[in-house]
Length: 478
Image 1 (cartoon, rainbow, N blue to C red):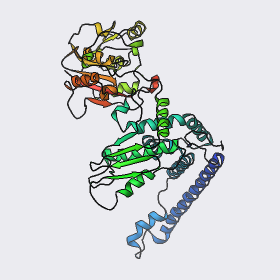
Image 2: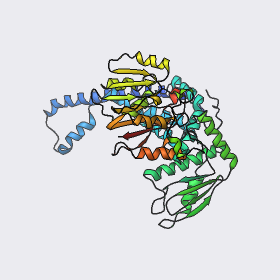
Image 3: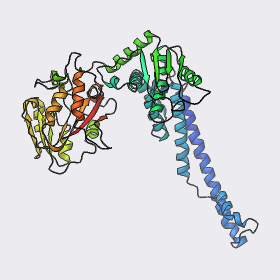
Image 4: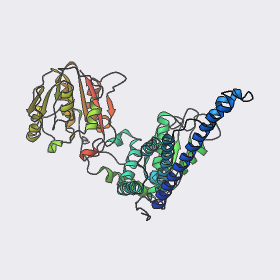
């Protein structure tokens, strides 16, 4: 375990001597246990002395130290919890060991800011395993296997923060110019709160990615050069700086535009993104799509475009949905019942429609008295506006989700609510077909501070079913 761990971005290596770390940890714990026992014994002797002294003082306190008597007693023989003291020491020691391992493996160098923050919180909350030889070795083995994925995910997250369009898995290439919005405060300095802070940290992530792909482990020169260029006077202003990989221009509106000088590195970044996203779903309309195309046919999506809804996504979709007992709910693309089961558990009457015969049989196997199952092409069913809610995860392939959403909306009764999981391109796609769909959706938006029209699902919400697809939740009311 003392050999370096290979990683093509040059980051992950093993700490110097795991066996020595673990041996010294065990010795320190043993010595501290002995010390705590000795301290406890000393306090017990002090308390015994205090009891013996009562025979000489008959309980009288010294006038000289009368005001400090309680403080003196507490310092000489306080209540001493040996178990709590040892546990606190062990927790502190283990946290320090994990910090050393994180530093010496250079793990944070391949993480984006989100993963670094999560790791810091995990260590601060003492949510790490005991750093024994076995757990350290297992952790390093896992990280070795996942190093490329961690790095790729960090690259994807860094650039996803820059452009809403990037979040759509049908358009994940990085272009030569990137825009960071509202990076600077009105005073002309770095913003250290809200969106500006996020953009500043994203800029650091972008510089880290390019530096590592260039084989350079040091980064931060660009951020420093920008800071230096803006020192000396207060107020919005423009500036231009250049570093090894970038040309950066800052503007009075607080934005920063970043040009990539090295096209070879740009190609490397895009290869990392392509490897990370893999084979993607073709969820974007073609350039020739016209607004009229939004009003659909009834053809099925290619291969029925079935991706089961993970449990975490179900929870997110249904969060805050107040279902009264007996409410009528339509699930028009029910799959094998990932959404159906929790809806039934809340006391709803659910009508589930599924086009695939085998999945239909799986739905019928739920055998719940409040569940009705139909095997049919939902797009060919006549609309009946009788439902309190429509809850759905429609097919994404092509732009089939638009057809399903428009048809499903017609099944709501007045005042009814529709919630759907959609590809991120539904919110950010730039074709005429997407724009027409969004205009229709906005005319039926749910108003209120808790639920907007669009809500991003957490990144990689569908990774457990084999696809790295960025998704959103759309909520509409009739």
